Length: 105
Image (cartoon, rainbow, N blue to C red; front, side, top):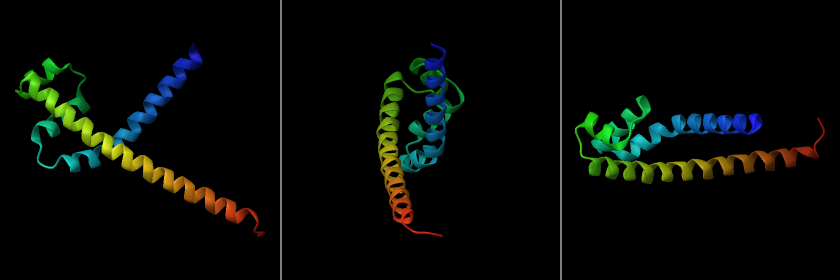
């Protein structure tokens, strides 16, 4: 059980680091979507439910749900682009290592 909890914690930390890295890209994709930008900033600071977010941001719960949907949409695109880029980078590194295996210093 302790190992599973440690693994979950490590995975959560990795995800948090990844999203912090990608956050600027998501914000750039949001452009002038102020509701989504404000929601993103609030979510980075506090863990609130949609009703609480709506109260803090002076929006309706429906507006919060729509902003979350837009954040999720852009976040998925950014994550997919990053994942594809990382896969290409790792493939290139493997190819380079394989190519260099036969060479002697």
